[in-house]
Length: 227
Length: 227
Image 1 (cartoon, rainbow over the protein chains, first blue to last red):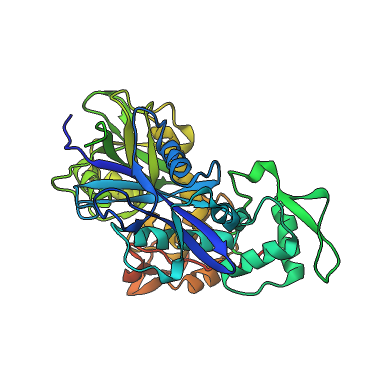
Image 2 (cartoon, one colour):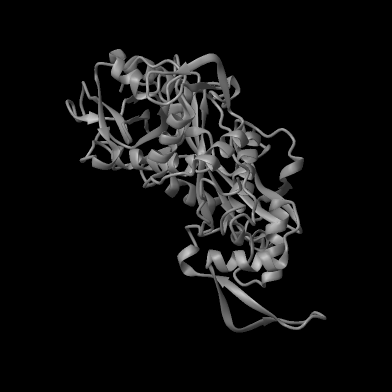
């Protein structure tokens, strides 16, 4: 083998929305380096059991957070001689989106939620990785169904609109929002299910169509759009 | 070290436009596995000399193609137990864009250009990697300065428009195209330089502004655009 051993890890940026603030779930490291520090959940690739790096990320999420199948996408690979004190390393980073209720339901007692805009120094280059994931989320939210994964299984359209507004950081016109959702064609009403208990009239509950659980509905982009 | 050795490589999808057809530059492998087959230029990460994987990709391009600093961007990481007969492997894939003249100028006698739409089976998962790069190029070309890297150092606006049309696969209105180029604000005229020798009146030559040699000019995307 003509190469020195390179450290191969997978890290997961697990994002959720608490109120209208985007949070990342951090894990307190239980071994060196940086033992005791908050960092991204991650670890070595296990070539004996992982089919590929996506499989490794899924295994790590399950082991460290109890989450089974959130929306998960490869973010990018971070690498080099300087990012890990143990040696030359590669981290294939993924990001996952989950409803905050799943984390707060105490499935994952070791996780600590931190607002992404208030991150202090994190070990390795984990802060860079988180910021790259947030940028990806904000960018993709402007043309896809991505933010829906921050909602629970059933949600009203006003709730989904609030999620888009929180991510994009600006108010959205209600009529235009609904037209956009029609265009995405990603939602279906849950028959007979309404949210009640507020002053307003009951609001229809929706859920994501099965086809869009692991792939996105995307607005195609014409070259001359916006010109 | 709690991990078995994982094969860590970098592969580069080098794309260029010959006529109006997108081509990928392949390299005839000079060692097993798949010795003698055409494949992407790539190789092991050298942890003793490469600063990171981008540095490894740059080194490989220089060694195998003679190209010094084309536009180069990380595409994604391909991994798993099955993609390389030598064992569990990771390939961090990059894509690069160059003017075809640079390749035809015989700087890189080992390279063979193949139309991306006519690829036969390639070793490893290299065909998947090429197709992912082509998809990325076509997608990004709809909202950014990316295709300019397929032109030479100096080019006319009609030439650049033809490049966009070749990538996007559709004709573009000339007035709208020029407005889009103004919006990108990525070009500057080369003072006193014109293309002559055709029946038309001489056409101004342009070049890319220095700021956009390794980063793109991008049209921001509003959530409600196109709705």
